[in-house]
Image (cartoon, rainbow, N blue to C red; front, side, top):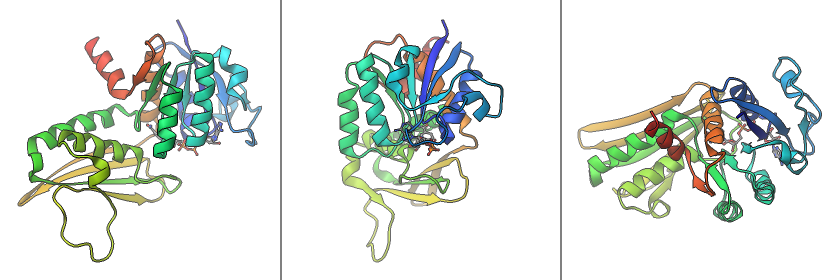
Length: 273
Ligand code: NAD
C-alpha cells in the first residue's frame, strides 16, 4: 500500500526536504497534499516545479481540512501556533500526525498533547537516526559516570532558527536528567554571564550558537577532574531529519492511538531486523 502523506510548511526548509525524502522513500509513499500559510505567495504552485523538477500534480493549498481525505498521515514542520491548528484538524479527521516543529511553550505542549490524545501521534525534537543513538549514548554515559561529572550541552544552528536552546538540546538534557534522577526544570542553566559563582555540580548547562548555515550540531560534555568525555552529533544535511520523519510517518499509519517518538519507530524496526 502506498502511504499518502501531507506536509504542512511545505515550502519551508524542512517541507521541501520532506517532499524529496518522500520521492526517495524505500517504503512506498507519495506526497498527496502540500499546505502552506494562507498569506504565502506560493499558494497554487506545483510542488514538483518548486523543487526544480517536473510537474507533480500536487499544488500548494492553504487549508488541511480541504485535502484531509486525500492523506493517510500528516507531517508538520512549521511553527507552534500552526502545529496546534493542524493538530485540531487531524484530530477532527482521525488523521495520524508526525510533528517535528520545536519551540512550544509548556502551555502549547500541553494543548498539543490534549488535542492529539486519541489518535496516533509521533513527535520528536530530532528525527535523525544518529541523534536518537546519541540520546542512548548520553543516557549510558550519565548512568556510568553518575554524579561525578559536570554536564554541559552545546548546540549550534543556522542564523534563521527562532528558538533556543534547540529542542534536541533540551531532549538531551531531559535524557541525562532522568538518568540521574534530577528534574531538568530545577537544574538547567541557560548561558552564563557576570559573577556567576562556582558551578553547582547538579546543574546541566546549555549554550546556544547561531551562525551562518549550520544545519545542527550537538555536543554533550561529561567532565570531571582530569578527564572529559564528549559525545557529538553533526547534521550535514536536513535530509537526515526528513528521511527519519518520513520513516516515522509510514510507521505511524496503522499504529493504535497513542503518543510515540522516534525511539519507538527505531526500536520497532530494529526488533524486526
Ligand atoms: P522554515 O521557516 O523554513 O519553514 C516553516 C514553514 O512553515 C514556512 O514555509 C512557513 O510559511 C510555514 N508555515 C507557517 N505557518 C503555517 C501555517 N499556519 N500553515 C502552513 N504552513 C505554515 O523552518 P524549518 O527550518 O523548515 O523548521 C521548521 C520547524 O521544524 C522548526 O520548529 C524547527 O526547529 C523544526 N525542525 C525540527 C527538526 C526535527 O528533526 N524535529 C529538524 C529540523 C527542523
